[in-house]
Image (cartoon, rainbow, N blue to C red):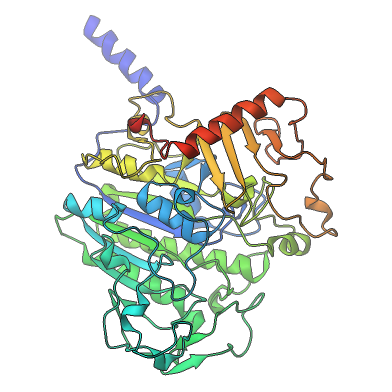
Length: 500
């Protein structure tokens, strides 16, 4: 009888045992789907009022764990990617993006997520937008000016180092950045076909906004509308190629969308009620769905961790979009891409970890993309050295239900070199006069409060998630406390608990 009561008690308590669902298989595959310039409020699972259908990602959210307080490291793309792949906040090293023909942002021999996983037996691949630099000077023809980027300035038959295959990936396919030259396909460390022209301007128009394409070397037959479909096809093929193989894989799939140029294919015209941008998000969702379908069809779904997130919030055109279509990409937050207001870095964040995360779970635990490095290190029993993943928190015990308290309660936000914000619990200090640029004066829906002439801004996010009420004058002690904490975290060179 005692045994029966014990069993009954265990069965009754099982649904309350946190996120833990069942023992996970050894060395699961890892798939990271990483959107570009997609706002928190674009995802239907985050925002019931979204005018954009995202059924595939909504299904992923329903099958896994959805974070309502997930963040990228920066309000722009290169820094966020660097931070996620190293577990180190970008602001310790740089703030801006890797421009066209810039060299790698990684330090020599710096440990990256793919390099770590490869040491533990993983096959590693990156398919999509790299935007972390290559050593283009290695193939520059002697005597050509360093600032010249004509298609005739480079020996395209040669390999160029510094890219994904030099930083832990076994395989790379992509175009580096959709609106940066060279406009040609890269496979591993060379171009598949050499540029035959120098693009000055793109004829015609994208479906919304402008091309935003930098001039430079290009294939004369390059089609911007086919970038996302081509990457999708390559991603599906890679997953299919892993069917039946014992070696686990890590696929990092950084999408070029919905970043400008806004180029949804014709099949997605009108799929949303938020204009061409909304249609492009819908196509982004479809791409993710195709990769997830490939996992299921290949028998890999039950042993693959899937992460979906984005590098930063939506572009400034979101103000016009909201005025025209009543769709706010950052809902319910203030700010957009480049801002240290929440809309700049508070992004969609989904994790489906078979045997660990419980389907349909929603959490308000604070998490950063830099935390994936330490979490995966724990997964594969990798002993991180002291000079790696300096800001990464290990979420594995909490995800497994071994710890009831989420590991992180503090986070530093930054985009520009001089402006920082720090989060601690419900409090957030913008240690600058403003957290970002003001929206157009005519946009009544997202007006910012009038300038109160205070040097900093303090918000209680639990009471004021849209950051409308600056409490700095009312709580000077809290301002001082958070400024001291910010200085400490910046000066000491790390924030990871294991390094304390």
